[in-house]
Image 1: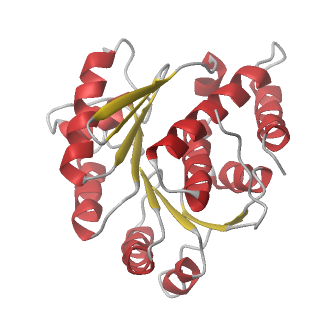
Image 2: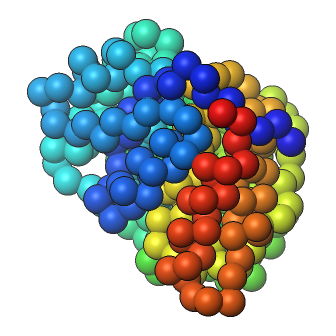
Length: 247
């Protein structure tokens, strides 16, 4: 597993949800990069143009945020900036799945990320889940099939996150083990992983870097595990992210 080096303090532009905005920004800072969370439609093209990577997170949708995502996606594609799409809640809302399809038809993505349920929902329109968490007991074979088909259809890397992260690209599957169940007990850790992936892509846009990002985050989660409570776990997690990468 390659650990992260961000000596050039690359700028990572995130259009994300307010629930996890602080965690995502601090995650990027902990990796040695610089976050900017600009989302006003009148400025996002200019901001994206100066960035090294773009993350679009569907966690909390507004009309203005949808407009900004489309503008930033277009700008990122025109300047060759890698884009990560975090399909939060795609399994629980027709509107979110429709938005994902709109974005996928509007531009190209380096990575499509989601939990097991979200990735299956993007593959199978009839699949439904409750809330933004993945259903329990999903078979990995189904996730691998969905991830592979999405990767082939959209010519991108697909990262399905869960107890084992499943990464599909170029007709192959990679699995990343590890982590801790406490990662699912704190709001925003999935969004934080999206920020890690986006930061890694700023250095190198390839499947190995995505796998490294997932492995790094799981390692930090495992080291952050605590018996004191989830508040302490979140503090520990940010400390591990900051302490584990090369500065």
